[in-house]
Length: 85
Image 1 (cartoon, rainbow, N blue to C red):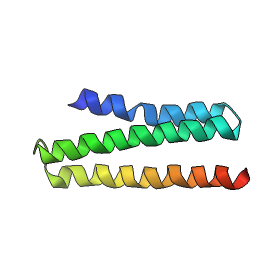
Image 2 (tube, one colour):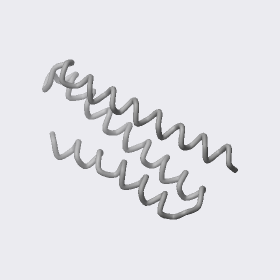
Image 3 (tube, one colour):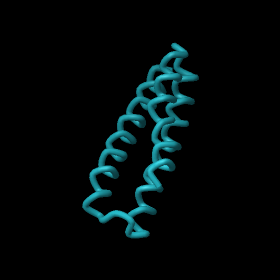
């Protein structure tokens, strides 16, 4: 339920912040990849909620759109780090 979504959502910004705080590109990239995994987990929770009809499509789609946008941001940051290397 809500607790499972929170457990998969919290590590996303936490890993981005931790990686950024390491102040070097390698650890930052690694933490971004971990954040990507947590984001995929969160998306999966939303898709399961929709499939099990616990919430309707209209409720889930905005959350999935935000997940997609965040995923694009993380991939962009990873590309930037790769280009700097």
